Amino acid sequence: MKIQNIKIALFTLALLAFANQTFAQDGVVTIDQDSDISKLLEYKKDVKTADLYKIQLDFGSRSEAMSLRKQFQNTFSQWPSELVYETPNYKVWVGNFNTRLEADIALLKIKKKFSKAMVFEPKKDD
Image (cartoon, rainbow, N blue to C red):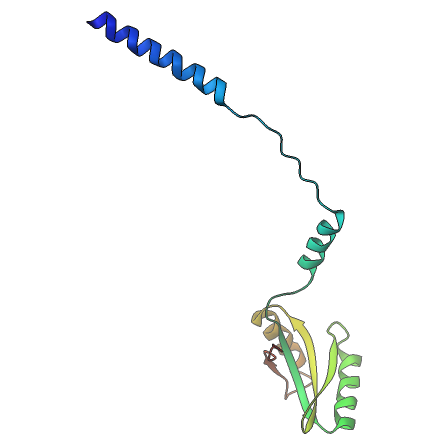
């Protein structure tokens, strides 16, 4: 009885080992993609898709805003500035900060010259 159980166990093991080798699948996967896809992925990494923060210096008439922007550009050339019209005022917006912390650090420097400056998160155009 013991010998028969051992024979059955050995036969089962041999059968399983053979089945594993017979039905195993080996293969090589080749990905054929356009080279532009890699370029687009790199470009997407560069484009900021996260929420951005800006600093508003002040608002007023067009001539006041242009003068303020020019004064800012002469003092702080490391941040981009733009003139934005929102009825009825022209506003001077500064920077594209990825985090609120970055904007607050810049605000500390900017407030020394432009006391009315404030950090805000622009509305998204949907």
